[in-house]
Amino acid sequence: MVDKVYAGAVEALTGVLRDGMTIAAGGFGLCGIPETLIAAIRDSGVRELTLLSNNAGVDGFGLGLLLENRQVRRMVSSYVGENKEFERQYLAGELDIEFNPQGTLAERLRAGGAGIAGFFTRTGAGTSLAQGKEVRDFAGQPHVFETALVADLAIVKAWRGDPFGNLVYRKSARNFNPMVATCARLTIAEVEQIVGPGELDPDHIHTPGIFVQRVIRAVANEKRIEQRTIREAVA
Amino acid sequence: MAWTRHQMASRAARELADGFYVNLGIGIPTLVSNHIPPGLDVTLQSENGMLGLGPFPLETAVDPDIINAGKQTITELDRTSYVSSADSFGMIRGGHIDLAILGAMEVAENGDLANWMVPGRMVKGPGGAMDLVAGVRRIVVLMEHVARDGSAKFRRRCTLPLTGAGVVDVVITDLAVFERPERGARFRLLECAPDVTPAMVRERTEADYEEDVMA
Image (cartoon, rainbow over all chains, first blue to last red; front, top):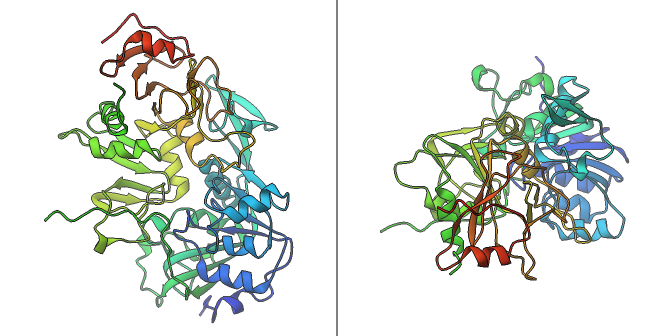
């Protein structure tokens, strides 16, 4: 029987990492990020990375760990406002950034996984992010041509996964993970719970195992909260 | 007297209609959720992939896997569903969201919106703002009438890089409300805050607009 489960992040990443590679990472802010794999990539010391990720983590957590360890050369992201080290490296010319509208980034990753070379979208038309891109009118409205994104390695975080690589995400921790899981030749998923064959309801699987080559159990599940907002109980 | 942030949010909530699917931006727009008129059924969408946002959680119910686009912890409702970011922006670009309420640095008289970068300052990125203004049917802007340096924010032309061209339908500031019947039409002054006169609004506005139809 096929078993995609590896002993841990180090084992799953063995022979995979090389300087200059492109890694796509799931998550929105610090929600649904593959904490275990990010820590292992930091420890590996691999350098000159291009990261495809909506955000860049925060100082000292998430992808911020790779930034402060000087392992990142370029980021393709939509919002990086929570990271001072990012700002410092960017202003010092040590880091390149390619900004994408968030929905365009999601769709470029989806296209990369689905064999679509590119697409036209109204998003960004008439803005500086359309500069240098083909613009074509559809129904009298200008649309911008955006190309697909593919990665050498994708790292995602799921709630539950089985030995076949089937994944179920949890709540808003799903975010970019499903598209990221499809956009690379090799996808490694870290999951909070590894379950046995047949334990996931086939109707409720978010990412089918065909997209996932390796599975590990997530051992880092801090799930740091960026904005802890609460309401008072009414007596 | 100028409207407070909460009064602005309350005024913006009057743009909602029963059955609407709505996306609220970060900042003052988030306050609108506290002012939804009783009896209106409104479903809030958050672009990170949640449809049907509930209120902030009680201390004991905080779940780091349930956040809104401002990365704030929130709660579910009985109607809540989760989707991927690609599907979430399908809702947005595909015209399925009725209304979005967003902040702004500048709005131009032709409806251009600038709210994502100031050249020379650190660029944080557009996030989902460009997708929202490109796809949501009606765009309401909530902003202070003048910038901290006293300059008008409702202008002839935006001086800052655009988020979208010709996309704004309603502008609500601490002094006044402007609206236009359709994209491409001119804005008109619809309301002023208490004790604020049309002349005072004119004095603090660079944009050209109509003011013959006062509510």
